[in-house]
Image (cartoon, rainbow, N blue to C red; front, side, top):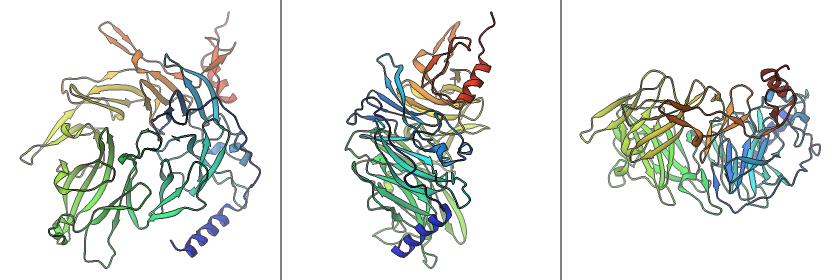
Length: 496
């Protein structure tokens, strides 16, 4: 992007936003407990992230419609619903010493979004408090922030129009995709870059990925983003190009020469259009699923769905190492380990697709009671077990065993319309379907024995306080007054 274009964009945003309430919002907060910025991080990019003995999580989903005045989402004045919490994980796995560490609404409509923790900073997304010329808060603009893990310092990284913008935080940059352009805003422990820079324009498809585990100062192959670009309209080439980037110089993986010989362009039937489907991390690399098609004599022909496992420090593509998983162009897959094929779950019949050595395809039926929202896959020698949600209930099933049945682990309580439920060890944190707050269960408490089944029951992750108005004498502590009234109505104290 030229300097003139960048200035024009800044001016356009300023005109839309109108009034800027500079200096009205104080970020004074904390300190909230102690920190451990050198500890390993587990579960980045989700509802709940663990760093050492601390757990950072979003206290439920609030509605941007509740932000009618700028003060409604000012730091320190925002509702406790949607704020980011900090708890200490006790030796028995319970949460203690809970407090609000980011008193501001976390929100994104990007369903693969979440919070990240790197070193001493929590990274998150929140609706802006800026207004247009009529005083209407522009909640469709999201601001990207970071706050110290003890709450004592906060810095804005950037602001972007659109609540569904795809993004990922790394330890040194925010990457996001909007208007066919992939952007980067870099930062260090001390400061944030003033402006966004363009990584790539005219992007046709993006597949964001990130490592869920982070060791301070160590990069991972899982932190690469994959994207495609078409050729210029006046080019005689067909298909598209595939790149990877971790925020640095893009790495070209596939172009018109990839399936050719001696560095020449491939024939038209091997100049493929790649459609990126899914990325899944394994201990020794990242598996990327994609479908391929080519255009011959004006007709599009599907080559099938493939997978490629990238490993090492930098992605590199070798045609001899791609794995065909289906003759069909699949649009959604669940990774169950390449040796096991690929699971495609739907509302009708679900299958495991697998290619035989002779090039033919097998389809093994997998039975579910509905459309599963898969939240965890355990791949072991004895089989592949998935944990999933159907009709707000947590279920599990060994999908590689045709005789296995699905097991119901809890009553209906899980909302899957926003950020996905997430595991931190044996703890599962999720948004509850009644009040919209984050609850937690420990799956090790589940009992499934003959004549003895103990279903899991979620507890509010942020804890409880005493109340003389409820049946058990407690009420969720970090809950709005309105929601507390509803809770009391639903759980009244028995009349004496």
